[in-house]
Length: 212
Ligand code: B12
Image 1 (cartoon, rainbow, N blue to C red):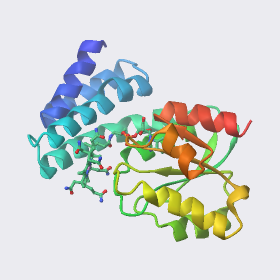
Image 2 (image 1 turned 120 degrees about the horizontal axis):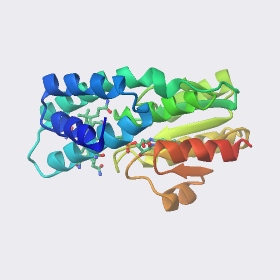
Image 3 (image 1 turned 90 degrees about the horizontal axis):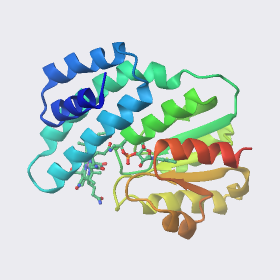
Image 4 (image 1 turned 180 degrees about the vertical axis):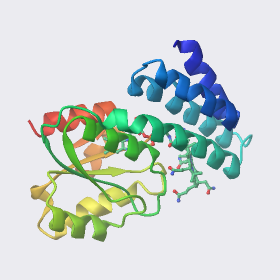
């Protein structure tokens, strides 16, 4: 299975050709290509292109949702492979997409990769208010709290969440890491987060480093 097949898969997702996408993907998987390569070589690039089409007004929300639906069906096929790894219990990570934000694809990729790297993951889902991060943290005592935001308008919720922990006197119990397409290292520094990951794999490396 070659880069050509990955490109065809990307194209089928972008063109909302479910039949073709669901025909090519299992063949690539059966050919033995590692899940991470399929993810980074076809699925994520497809969503990137869909994002551009959406931004430029060529695709509308229903189109994006159709692409996401195809993406989800293929992700479900490679997820078990992403989660497979040597379990060493490197630490406990709580993940959530911040309040007002329902983008959870990137966070779920991070979750799968973390599990594959021996982390225990508590996934709070999407649209998580600061109070829920706080309540769940005191209930489950994670080592790290990871927040995701895809909208510039929801990024301030990350600061609100860290500020709530400061106000509650619990900030120093946890490490905070943040990510999502509009987030930057400068923003992480500005809001007092302990780290920022540009993509899921660097997020995993960051956590290994923070907990070593
Ligand atoms: C899919 C999608 C949707 C889907 C989401 C489905 C879902 N279940 O997630 C739907 C259709 C629901 C949607 C809705 C909307 N969307 Co939208 N969406 C996208 C799209 C096309 C892809 C996002 C994505 O999944 N990317 C792929 C993943 C893998 O990338 P990622 O999330 O960045 O994650 C990676 C890294 O950032 C990192 N990471 C992510 N989180 C974390 C966390 C930590 C701790 C770490 C370390 C790392 C990390 O790891 C990941 C893997 O490498 C983007 C365009 C784009 N290319 O980003 C627009 C985009 C994000 N959406 C946008 C908009 C405007 C909206 C809507 C407001 C549209 C509307 N008018 O209703 C709504 C908002 C809904 C809401 N309240 O949240 C804009 C945002 C503009 C902005 N600057 O704020 C974008 C950029 C599109 C555009 N070009 O205009 N969207």
